[in-house]
Each structure stands twice: as structure tokens, then as C-alpha cells.
Image (tube, rainbow, N blue to C red; front, side, top):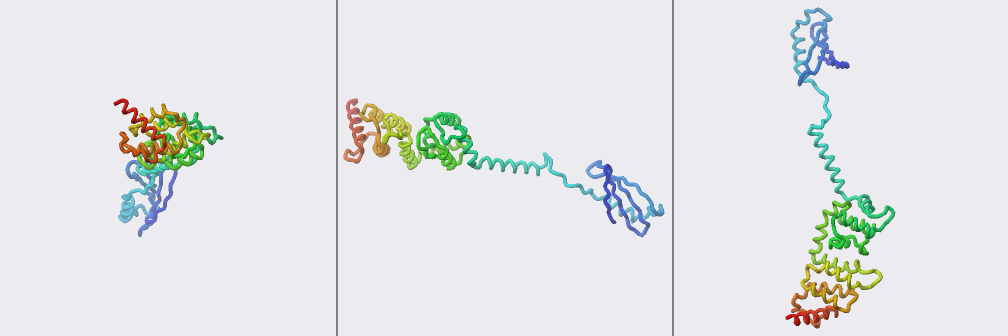
Length: 296
């Protein structure tokens, strides 16, 4: 059987040439969609003897053809098609991955939300808005941890270079990403090595850059932030500093205060008067013991 496809506009008509020992007969097939398969109606035209239609071979060949399912064109995925849903999920996942990836461009644009476009320094006014956006008070210790990560040189200021370097390291280019990293930044205080590094960093970060030493008021505030909750003798040391003659704290004194808080017991029983502690701490021990003996 030879099959010739001759499609028309409204009714699909297929012309079949059936070759048998009889004269050639053409069957014109008219199809319309009335169910899962196309309903087939056909008419016959005789070009020879009408009794040639009685030949059973012709009818068998035609019946075999009409019993076959119609080959349909492959349809494109619809909104309910699983293939389409899979494609949508794949596209969404890719977009989500791109949003989660760190973007330098997005990071810089975020920086300029707190500065003018042509400024390379985020100052106190922008810092206040930044802290408000991430939901952290400026005096919260996590801001000191962030400044340490950015290696910021001055309290209350972030340069664009510091911002980009530090935010790249912690992979943050948006408010939500940084909020998700705040606990990580706080957790660094639980590591003794990180804490020591942050403590030492705080001295140069907080002191007035025009002075070699930190003024005593700033020192009290920073010591309270760093040691207030962890050093049992901090309250007594704070009182000692307030009534003392000291107006500034130098870096050697600052570093030794941390070592003293870590190594000397709250009752000072293991304090060695012949140790290499700064005079500041020797005077504190003497003051503490005198006050304790007077109160007992």
C-alpha cells in the first residue's frame, strides 16, 4: 500500500492507492477528531468496474489501515505537564543558586545604600542606618567582630575597600545574608585564639588615632564590652580605674589585663608579686586587698 499525504485546511483528507490484481481504486479519507482516536469516514470513487469493490483483499488492506492509531504531532508541554513543571523547578533552582552566589557588584551596590555614590567611606550616619537594617545596636559586640573581619581601621567608619574585602571573606552581599552570619561572628568570641585577636584589635580600632594610648573612658567602655561578662573581677577593676590617677591605658597594659583576667584566680591567691605584671595591675591587687580587708 502506498500512502500519499494530502492535507487540506479544515478536513484532513488522505488519498490511498491500493494496488491489487483489480483496477486501481482511490479511497478518500475524511477525518475529524471525535475521541481518543480520529473518527474515520470515507467515500469511494470507482475508476473501473463497480464490482471491483467486492474484492476482499481491498477491504482487508483498508481495514488494517483504519485499525491503526493516528500518529499525532508531539505536543509542547502545558502548564500542568510534568515536563513543564520540572523545567520550572530547574529554572527556579538556578535562579536561587545565582541569588545565593556572592556578587561583588551587589556588594558594592549595598555599600552605597549607606553613602553617596561617589563616596568611598561609610561614616557615622550611614553606620547608624546600617546597624538599624541588620537589627544590631552599634555598641553590640558583634559589630566589633564584624569590624575585625573587615579589618576596619577606625571606629564608626568602613571604607569601600574594607567593606568589599571583609564581606567577600564572609560571603555577604545583602542584609539577609549578613543577618544569617551574625551568630557565626558571635561564635568567634568563644574561641580563645580568635578572642585574643579581637581583643588586641580592639585597642587600635577604638583609640584616638592622634594619640599613642587609649583614653581611660574609652578603655573602660571597651573592657566592659569584652570582659564585663567573663571576668569576675571586672567590677572591682572598673572601680579601681575610676578612682585612680590613670588617664590613659597603653597597649602593654591593655594586653596584660587580658592575660591577668585569664590566669589569676578571683581571690588573687595565685598572684605573684614578683611577676612581670605592669605597675597598673600591681596597684590594682594592692587596692583590692586593702578594700577587702576593710570590709571584712
